[in-house]
Length: 554
Image 1 (spheres, rainbow, N blue to C red):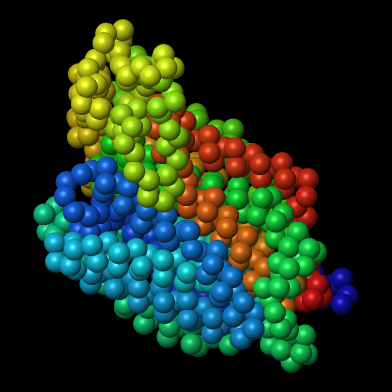
Image 2: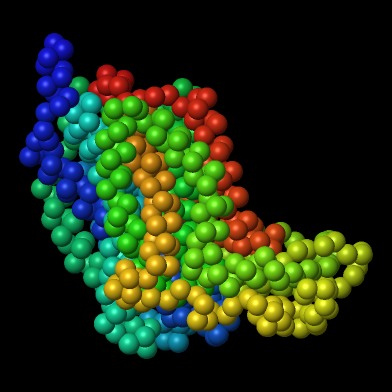
């Protein structure tokens, strides 16, 4: 190809067929993310419907377990559907994953409550979450591979970046639907049955998505491979049983997707978790703040995808990891000062000290919410963490009972639940949920006219920019790392190990760190450490891929 011809191909406008591929693939993937993230956005309502009693801790654990279950199985979905995608084709595989996702989401909307069918209700919900996780494990790799294999060589970052917007757009759409319902229903109606509507709507989205994707043809790279008879007979064995390919997957995970995942989940899901669970902002206000930051920030996925075609995937991804790690503490502290200044001031001025025999204090790591904590030291610390109260744990004499002092004064902990400590801390300056000092603007106009809300949105927008830096180029990079014959399988596993495990377990892992250390900001150490590990490994071992010919590296 002459230089003039290559330049023309590089700068030509998007064709109608390429536009159709991007729109169809992206629309379907948006709907899948919408389905998947409803469970996180409606966690409190789901827990109220499917968990018996009034034990807030039990409900919180169920929420974490339900949230984590869908992420835990994503790598297995990546293996199963990735293999199918390399054997039978990209198009038909992600039609199957879409159908599974839509049906399981619809079923959640129909599930009877605990009061009706007992423990079968939470069990059925977890089963639906597992099915969603398996489906999502196969969806993303198929969509990203399909779009990349339709893209011109020098525009893969730009074309696949539209797929990268889908996770954020899906989250945004789920928040938008929930907000619309909340604003048009009484809280009682929404709690009774309104929360089910977003799940039931998914059946309509499923029908539209299937119709759109049925119009598509198989990817040209897969068709070429099939015509030449060069396809893999055993994609799993070839991708992960041979060191030359397995090594690429390991580098892609630790030098790419692990850091990308924690930055993504910190900037979007952990930010929402931090607002509602730690800073005690009401759900509607928090959703509005997140939704506006996503709306403003989403175009930057495309920008950084486009930029990666110019300067490379690697420098943008690693810069996003490094900048995020360096600024998280500052940004989250500023967020706390903005939306709940009384809480932040209390963390600085109210000194709560626990003294216990540390042999009677276990670690509080519980990523899937199945551990039962009975030791007074553990129960009290978890209670304090749930109420966003700082404490310092001091080692006491062997066999000594748990004791507490607040600003130097002894406080009773005889009930071993932490309730008395929480009441004392709140009397000393810690705010309660619903206090007037906490930012509350549950309307669009209120958020857009409140200086505090605008400041909070600005901070959240910066977090979203970090997300777009690491996520915009990642699809193109992963596609370019693997040959066509094992591409679907090869890219899907490191992506979903990174995003399903490193990213998906971020909220419960961060909570465990907070509960163990007594510092509401300490959970940020998890994404910071992972992002820095990715920065170092990526800098040393991750290759630049933007100029690779994905047809030639078979």
